[in-house]
Image (cartoon, rainbow, N blue to C red):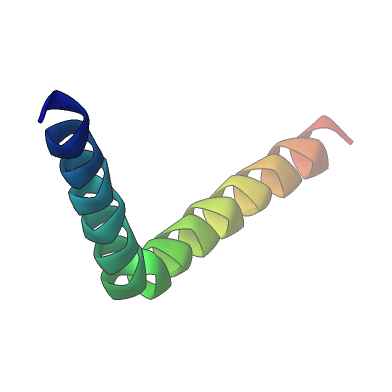
Amino acid sequence: MKETLKSMMLIGIGIGATLAYQKYSKPMMQEMEKFANKTMKKMNKELEEMM
């Protein structure tokens, strides 16, 4: 009984994680891209100021 309950819980967690990934992966990637672009612009600006 305990093993079955544990297995069902793990399956539920896996399904939840899969659904969350499918729903939020695109917006999350867009936010990561924005953050990377901001960071690169900031680094370029600092390098230009050094030269």
